[in-house]
Length: 95
Image (cartoon, rainbow, N blue to C red; front, top):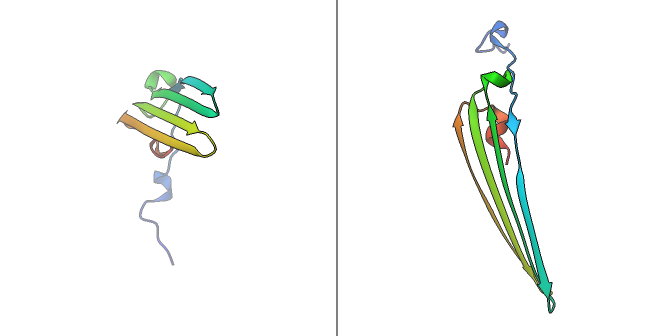
């Protein structure tokens, strides 16, 4: 029989409320059969006791994409971010 390491009474639910914003920029240029496309996004989010959250954290996530194409396409992607504080698991693992 399997025995749990923690008693069931130790399991609890936690609020993970957060303020989230997003800033996105798109740019597309084309001419002579060439296409240049860029997309940049900055997504800050933060959890606080003032928002009734059990997690206090700040997260910044930045994404950038560049596409160049004629008949074939070249795509470059960039992803960077940082988390300060105690973030919930889904904030740590999602991009």
